[in-house]
Image 1: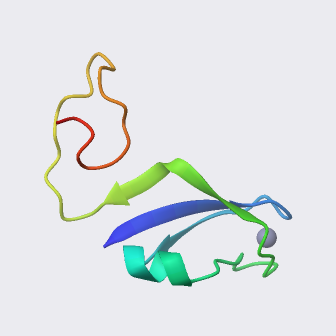
Image 2: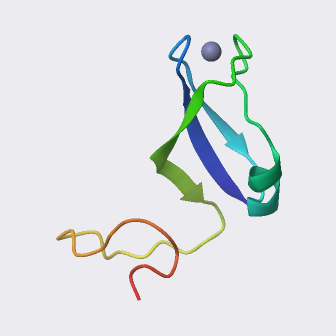
Length: 71
Ligand SMILES: [Zn+2]
């Protein structure tokens, strides 16, 4: 299950939440501290646990995004 990292626009707290892609579509994420819904996903904070690490991050040829991105 992917872990998504968010930053709260109100209190600036960074937090992580785990949910499936389906849940992410249907869930309004809110800050655990101030319960604001003014949160932004940190795009580079997505990590897929349980996936094998691919060591192709040496020279930045990859877009660093989705799973099919590096071909
Ligand atoms: Zn907050």
